[in-house]
Image (tube, rainbow, N blue to C red):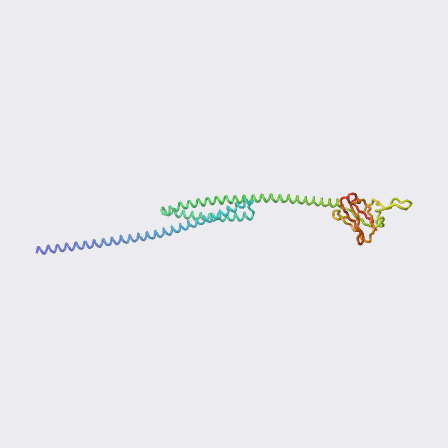
Length: 309
């Protein structure tokens, strides 16, 4: 009896111990399952954060690349504008149309700088909210903003330079207009003086010519017979009367030959002209007077009266 009771007690104890172990195993397994789920959730969260961080980094890098490319374009445009302004300065200034073109280019550069600054401001604000993860970006943003400040200062100087060059051109144009006005006035005065000189020279070289028969000359009172005795003898001489309407005029510098037209067989020069300064030759019809030395020929009289019959 005693042995059977002891055996039953031992079996019960063993059974109870086995149940406790089973319950402990199930609890440990549940705990391990919870830890695994938690690790999986944390891993997924880290993966999502890593993906978001990569996306934001790519986005930030894209903005930085855009700003840097924009600055490079600004640098090229600025260099082009600087060269143009130096060329205009060497040429003496900027014309009105060129000024508008250059100011338009300056405004385009200024607008590009404004857009780049806005991108950097947004990038800086975003990096400020990301904590330590994007601290490296802040230094680059500051450096890019410094470059923008320098470009804006350069553009301001360029705009001032263009305005100064335009003013230089305006002053030059005003001086040129004044000089042209003075030249026009001087030219007008010169033309007036030249015309007056031509008139005076023409008047100084103007001579009078009359070729007429004895009867015509007498009828107009240009000649009379002098030295007669009882109506006989004597010679024809000039009366001294002068009627410009009866004479032909010409420039003595342009005429050294005078033809006596018609059936003229004799010709007498009544006015005073040096005999060695001229000669007469017959033609098929009439006679021709040749003036060898115009200066001497016209030195005593500026009128030539020829009695031709």
